[in-house]
Image 1 (cartoon, rainbow, N blue to C red):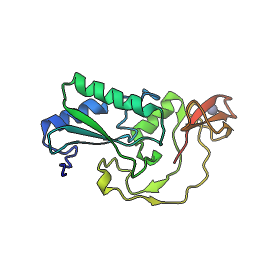
Image 2: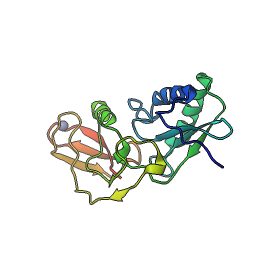
Image 3: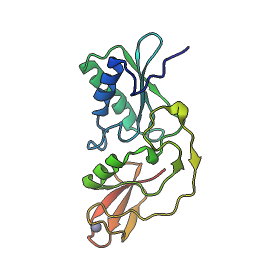
Image 4: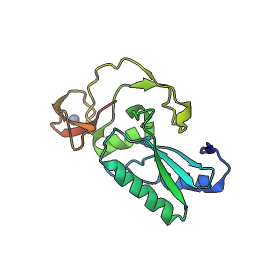
Length: 186
Ligand SMILES: [Zn+2]
């Protein structure tokens, strides 16, 4: 089966509208950032039968937020009368924190979550939403200490491997004494 790989540059007004609608769908766990900014939303395209296909990649397998995200996408598209649609979950290439765009990193920090430091992979960090074009090359990751999202100090210590969710670790700033969540890079 062939499906057109129309992307954001598409002149199809329905696809353009779908992108706009989906870019405003927030992450259920971190509502200050959208699923697009986190890199969860990979593509919006039209299948051969005309159905809108929304391609998403889970932040990690078994992430409990994914069913909520799929539900939110469905609601947003229904509200905009963008039907019929379906959601395709793509597991490869695996999501990496490298896909979180610069804007979203700043929002995470403002929200009190230290954004991931360092880089896990090279090759698809430009916000390119076409998974077919992805080439991931793993690079050595320097052990990094996250900076405190409140005071910016790198004088921080890890309290627990898991924070408020499994994808975050709990840290504490030694200077301002505030505990904070660190979005673990992977
Ligand atoms: Zn601090």
